[in-house]
Length: 145
Image 1 (spheres, helix red, strand yellow):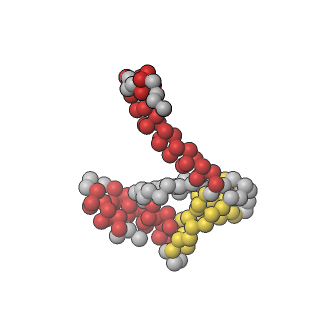
Image 2 (tube, helix red, strand yellow):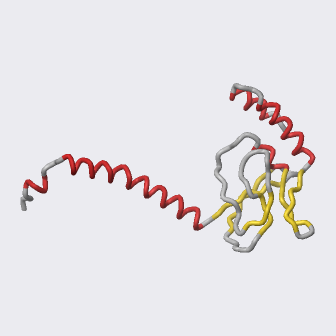
Image 3 (cartoon, one colour):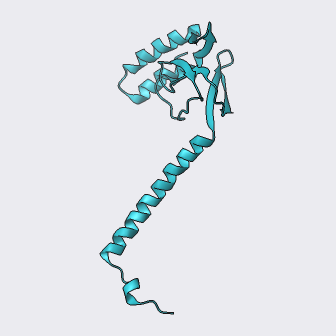
């Protein structure tokens, strides 16, 4: 069966529609996939201060728990949340020091518990921050404990 030429002719309108579909459809599917992935599972990373190891666990609890409420940097905040905070796996300046901090419920409040190594690590990171070259900063930060 031969289609009429009016249906097979390439026009400016057909080119524009094809371009819009080929650009927006993958982006829309990506965004929907990210949102779906975050809705079905949330991961949290817990550090063991003594062994410097981390464990990742999945949680879907709806009860309020005491935990870290922000994801990156040396400024760690604790608070109650209904679900664990979803964090990106991107590394930010000072994330190395977060292994020395935890949140614990004490006397009915969620409080930050700092290992003595935390303040020295933060001081070291702040000194490294004054370096303008990223390579020099990275080398300096790797020496912070």
